[in-house]
Length: 276
Length: 195
Image 1: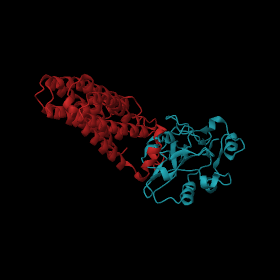
Image 2 (image 1 turned 90 degrees about the vertical axis):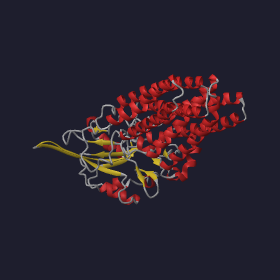
Image 3 (image 1 turned 135 degrees about the horizontal axis):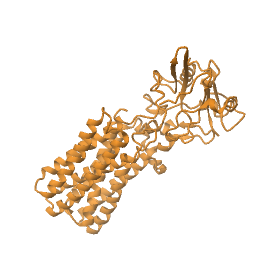
Image 4 (image 1 turned 135 degrees about the vertical axis):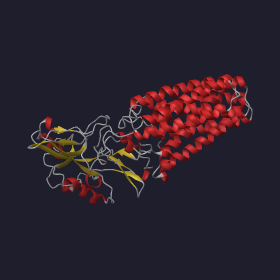
């Protein structure tokens, strides 16, 4: 199946934003990296907006997009994406305002809400693709990969910004621990998707999977987080981890589309003999 | 109520009259089809050769995935006829219904930027007065339309003529339960599961 790049960009940006909201929430719960919260929430809001715009570019008839809003409680996959995208954007804005007003209680409450919404959005971005007609998509590895990918991108975005606003070293160390967990989740998830969908063993896709997705997308971020934890002064590791996580995220999402053949394609096979 | 097509492959010659009739009746543009005919075969070794044709279109699934994934409700089941249809006025062209369809029978209209598919000629059949154009145009009389839950419908009466081993469905690996039935007698050809 052709790669739907507008949807790749959408889930990449929205996933990164969702992951960063999770890390804002974690920081609020532990009272760490307070200075990073405001800029991250702004960036998350911008990413959510840009992601939303990217998703609209996929539509054949965006004029009718309000129909999706009025039908949002159909709880279809896309409806859930739209719902949690909107709620996450709202939370990002409210968090930014609360942070600006230096409301410690406000940022904590909103931050925790953002953590929950972010976790849900990380999953929902992938669960909408759980379609029985696309066997390669219809396994738990798919939404788990979206979840892990979003967390690791969000984590490195958070630590990159935290470094730039000169957050305490101990707070960076704690963030790195969470990023390591996120990267391990991403690694396990990517492996699960690769094996359950078959892309890990398909000669045409294995190289992209093992190199871009597993090694670059999960392996390098794990190493970067471990090294950054050991030496918080090496800020370049945050950039490398972020870029690697994004590359892995793009690679995974592209592979998903390439592997997404349907059960049967009557119209596509009309001029040839179907295998039986 | 299960309005759908019953197609007797014992008599289908793959002439594509149903394809042409559908395009003409529904004003479909160049390159757009709401139904296609697939050749299956020839298989076997001379003189024991077999071949048949499968006309494919929306299977009117009982558990239509295209309806459940639609974010706008554009893909819906008509409450009066129980036929799965598309309301173009609310379709956003997200293609999710096409991703969810196990049979690849939905098409994107590049001019109107919405999804389309076989409607069982609802404009002719909804009030019970007409038949789908493909049924009328079939040169061998192998297409039947009707309610499978009505034993007096054309579709049900045709099915009743055959043993169960002659009645087939397209693969239901996605759990959508296609309603469309295909009749293929073993003495004509062995049914081959498509993949």
